[in-house]
Length: 114
Length: 114
Image (spheres, rainbow over the protein chains, first blue to last red):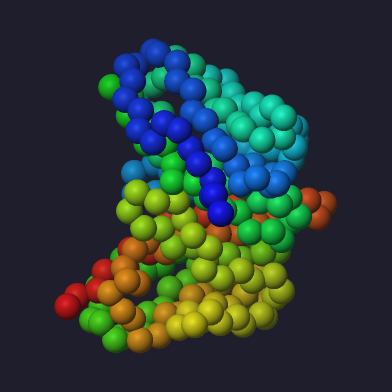
């Protein structure tokens, strides 16, 4: 069956531009998670959605980052006025929503800010 | 925030050798997970542990949830070339029993020498 998909797979942008990253979760998964992985580092949790609601946005690195989810499915992570330190792999995961349900990860979007 | 200390950072071993890696935390986690990440891919779940003291196997992989809930180890027996990759530990707290993001270690790079 289809897994988590993310687009674009790679994005190169200039400092100061806005970017939008998209995540399509596994069909039927109510929980959706965004993580950031910097070069050679582990994954840093950013935000999660239960349905369309994000209970806790404190993991977002700055107010330039925002995320939304509509229709309980697709989610977008938007970074405004990108900075070079935003360069990283942005990974999305989804799960059935029960606390012990496995989070399945997408392949990520590799963002490079020049 | 919570942090996981994962060691070793990298391992250079011969094919057929056993591998051991571990994670420790200064705070309690209620779920411990071990993921493997191949280049250009998202992490894939290997083993999930839900109870303190639990010892779980998945083929040649064995993992344990420490009795204090502050540590976990992963063992790989009789390593083979496809075991090469980055292994991450991850923990979840589940505040209030709900879903939450994963806290990841920085990873162990496993390299198998021919």
